[in-house]
Length: 258
Image 1 (spheres, rainbow, N blue to C red):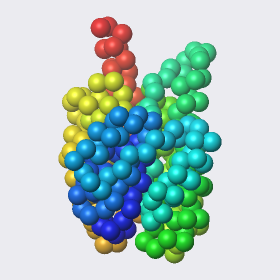
Image 2 (image 1 turned 180 degrees about the vertical axis):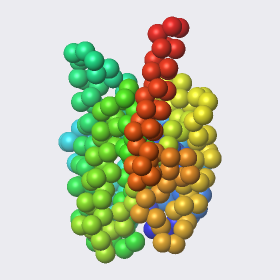
Image 3 (image 1 turned 90 degrees about the vertical axis):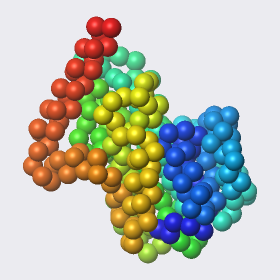
């Protein structure tokens, strides 16, 4: 994927990983459209950058995605890169009957949202030079965290979907997977200050450096996520799962005690 001269759409671009990547891509010489639910956050992300643009998008809504795609192509017909970054992460307990609203919202946002947006834009992208689709998954696609089961499942599904999409679009659209580790963002309450998580700016800098490689890796993996990505191939999946499960249990006990 070329790193300048693109018109890039980034969903979930008003904060966190989306905003950090949007700023870096803009400053590298790209036109960037950030999309999401909160217009105020999107406009704040664009402040001071003349070639960044904000557009509202609710990826949970099938009708909203279709309407957004029409508005996007009317306003920015040269868009050639789609970065599916929008996502939510909800904690869930699997040991008792529960309201499945969080699971349903997670699937709608993290899985159906990018699938719908890809579907709406794939013909345009296939006909556009230097086109690319970047799907943001997670290290938890490869080793799950037991307290966020639906989140893990959606990211594992997007990993598989990306593999299929890459094979189908070979020679037409470059398809890339970006799998972050635990990063200091507001994906969950308090996460932006959580010790042991990768600082957002350091993560974004490392990602941009990897995008600058020739050729761009089909999987963009910062060093910190390789512990999870490579767990199965290195024969330590069960050990790594046990470590994550122990961490989750300790965190839950700390919350219950507070």
